[in-house]
Structure formats: structure tokens, C-alpha cells
Length: 125
Length: 392
Image 1 (cartoon, rainbow over the protein chains, first blue to last red):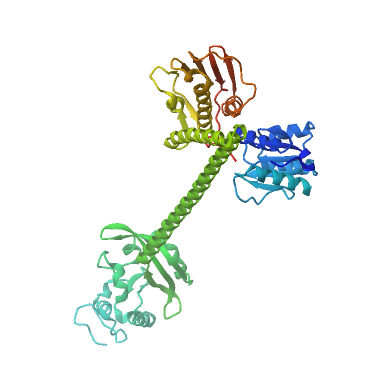
Image 2: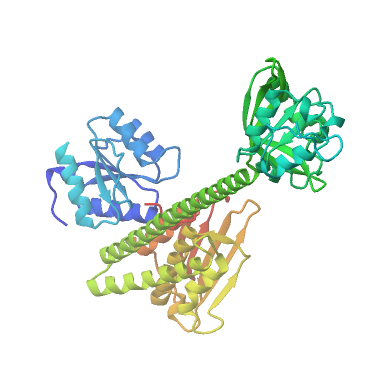
């Protein structure tokens, strides 16, 4: 994995209900030098953000249990924290109703892909 | 005026031709009816009859205070199955079976107003049975020589066959529409199944990818990482085989345990397995399979399965609320000195990942006489859409 870049100092909130995938994503991002927070569902993620988690970027899955899915979470976050970068990940190849400023990451993805996507999205913001 | 050979019958020079019904009308003894002999009939009736008898369209007319019936040859098929004495019979008497349905139209015509009805359904007696029939017809007033309404004329087409054919066509069209809708529904279901299949395939790929990257991340070298990944994927594949047998719905915990420990069962007393039947979701089955694979691999390297006398006791129970308590206890192996300093993938998988699938907790204890892994699940609740392996 590449060494730290300025973007690597970002704090990323990973929202993924599948613990094995979440663990892998968290490990990958931590290996890349990011600070990583994790939540198993959108409700928990929103509560963490409201509590001042310090996250700069939201990386969320779409299909998750709870009162809202990842797209609902992304829309709420975009409205509530307009400066926060958002990456939505899904096994579906195309999504038509992504929030305008968010990036899309198609599952499955390799470590380099996720890190590159995070960095590019953070730089764009 | 020539006299008819038959007594009481008098032909009229205006009433000639007219086919079979023309002959019948001329042969009929009208002197015994309320119309009187033909010689006394008004010109209006005679001229109308002449026109009707020369017409190929089915027509009948009723004339006089009793509305006595006349009809042409084209009308004869409509009398099929009915009494043969229609000619000269009063309307109300001969058509008693349908009188209630047409009386209003008759009254309209006698009042000087015409009507036109399309496909009127009438229960008509034919061959002694009331049968459904359909008629398109007009009723128009007939005027006497002095201009008063003396009867009505009925220009008619029986549409029973047409209506039935149309109904059959509509039924066929409806049947085809239903079949088409059913086909569309089947295509929709197929698309859903295809999406579900793609979804599960991607889930499996994502899980395999996580297993591979985690195996490589925690291995001391590529070769060890590749071996670990291969073994873990094999364990996953065995669990998937079980789930395929049950359409990816559930798997019995006993089967999951047996399949997971089978690579290490080198003699009959190696494992003691005890617990009730209990359905695991697909996620739980895959997770427990991976956990048992990690525990077995670790035991084969360092624990009870690394010595001839080592044994593993696996047992579980299920509470009334459906909560699972599962325990892996090693014994008879080399003494356990201490817990490993670094948490590898196996430890994280068994203590962090797998409990999530059971909404519970898990712990590994490194006891001197052997490793003990305990997994406690939460009460079983309805979990819609949790039968798939992983939700992307």
C-alpha cells in the first residue's frame, strides 16, 4: 500500500452490515493510513455523526437492516453536512439515484480501488 | 275479384307472389279472424304485405286490434322450434314467452314512434325449452288507409350466433390477456431471480475476496497466505453446498458442525458432538463453518488435534426463545501456555465477525488444558431478507 498522503489523514466512517467485509474494508483503509470509524447500520452511523464523530468522509453500503438504507443515509448526510464527502458502495453495477455529490464504488473491489476512490472523492470535495 | 276455391278464402289481386309465405297467406282463412276476409283488407295492409313478402330481409308485421302476425320467407328460420301456427296468431299469445320484454317497444310503435334495439337478449322457447337468444331489430308503426296506426312492422336479425361468437372471442382475448399477464409476471419473477442470483454471486465473491485479503494480510508469506485462503474458501464451499440443498434458506447446526470437523476426524473418539436440531440462517451457517475451520486449523497446529490423544467436545443448547449457546472445548492436547500476543484473522473472525451473525457474543479462552470457544446468540427474531449470505 502507498505511504500516507494528505488525504490519508482523513477520518472515514465505514457503514457496512456484513462484519467480514467491514473488517476487511477497515483493515484496508487503516493500512492506507486513514483513521477509520465503523458502524453496522445507518442508524448507528447517523447517531455517531450527530455525536460529533469527526468523520470527514462517509463510506456506506446500501442494503442494510434498520430504519434506512445507505442511500437514505447518504441523502441525510449530504443535507445535514454538505461538506462531507460521500462514497456509496454496492453490488449493483449502476445506481441512478445517488446523491449528486457522492461517488460510487462497485463491489467487489480491490484494496487499491477503494483507497483510490476515497482519495479522489476527498480531493474533489 | 276471383273467388278462392276453398270456402271462406278470397285472394286479392294485389297480393301476388311472395314465395312460400305468400301462398300461405293467400291460403289462410282470414274470414275467421278479426281482420276478416282478405277482400276487405285496407290497401295499406295489402301494399305493405306485398313489399314485405318481396323482401329478403327477415320481416314480420302485426296488424289489427289483436296484432295478428304476418311474416315473409326470410323470417321463417326465426320460428324454428316454435309452434307452426304463427301466421295469423295474435302477437301477445304467440310470443307470450318474450312479451314482457318487448311490450314496451310495441307500445312505442303503436304510439307512432319507432325504436331500434341491438342484441336484445330474450329467453325464447324453442323446441319446448327456454333458450338464450339475441336480436337486433326495429319496431315501426304501420298506418292504415286513414292514417291511424293499425299495427307495427318488425325488421329483424337474430344475432344469437354473432353474440356468442363475439363472447367467445372476448373470452379468448381475455384468456390470452391473462396468459400474457401471467407470462409477464413469470418474466418479472425470472428477472428478480436473476438479480437475486447475481446478488448472491457478488456476495460470495465479496466474502471470498475478504477471506483472501485477510489471509494474505495476516500470513507470514505469500505461500502461507495462499494455503490459508484456499483452506478457508474450501470451508466456505462446503457450507454453501449444504445451503444449496435447502435453497439457501437454512442449514441444521448438526450438519454444519459435522461437515466442518470432518477433515480432522482421524478416529471415532476425536470429537464428541451433542446438541439438538437447530436451523441456522445462511449467514450463521457460513460464519460458523468458517469459525470451526479456524478453530480446527488452530487445534491441529497447536492444540488438541495436534496429538493422538487430544479430543474436542462440541455441544450446544437452544433456549426457549431460540437463543443458541455453543461451545468448543479442547482437551488431552499439549498444555496451553498463553494466549497469542497478536490477534490474527482466525481470532477476529471467531470473536468479532461470527457473533454478529448470531446477534450475540463470543470468546476464546486459552485454558491450560485446552482452548475453549464459546458463542452465545441472541433470541431468534424474524429476520426478513436475512437468508442471503451477505448483503452488499
